[in-house]
Image 1: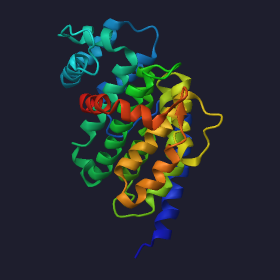
Image 2 (image 1 turned 90 degrees about the horizontal axis):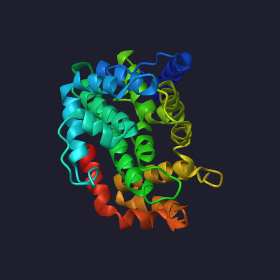
Image 3 (image 1 turned 45 degrees about the vertical axis):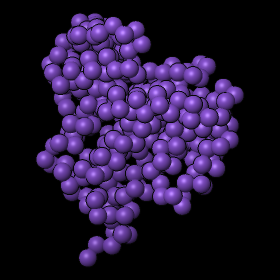
Image 4 (image 1 turned 180 degrees about the vertical axis):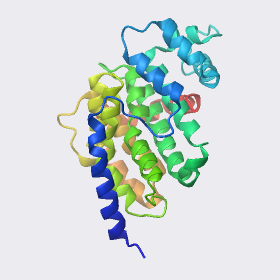
Length: 286
């Protein structure tokens, strides 16, 4: 009978084996919809036109419909003018929000794949974290000097890509993740670096890549030299962990969050001030 130690050793060897993949230009997420992967590549290519981007979006009607709905939501449509087609949605939302929305769409699609059924609870947990953190980042990011709300939202939605990659690769190779208590610790040590590799491979801004790699800075108390985006992302992730934690664990997490400030304002005060907007944004992204 395999022990936790046996699993941890197998998991370590598995992750070590993935290290070579991080240097490849053609990183692939198992189960990631092909249309979304091609869209991410196109968005990273400066020679591609908006027409090219819209054509790729139209190849996946459900994604096109989601972008139109998002562009018409109260959280993303301040003008009140109705958006009726993908081109108008792309123009209004911008490429970073399109990237984020496409990734969110892909993550929800992956939950429906038969071969990933055994790890659906894990996928659902990754989605909840991505969605909750992205909503906080987008709303609070709009309030913080020097930050862009679209980049903050992208950092929030992409920060779990490493976990998604590890989960799907491990399941495909037969590692018994769902029944192994040691998996979370193994993934925790590796997933931020892997997420950064995907972000760089998809040609996204370096400030997003750096923030994602340092997503646990707040939890480790290492914010002294952190960028504003890193401060926001890591605080938002810690805040989501507090929301998900048992009642007995929440005070300790809140104590870590209390001293965190963004542009001279306490992070928790910003979250409280914009609680309704964060809730609306979380709903719109979902």
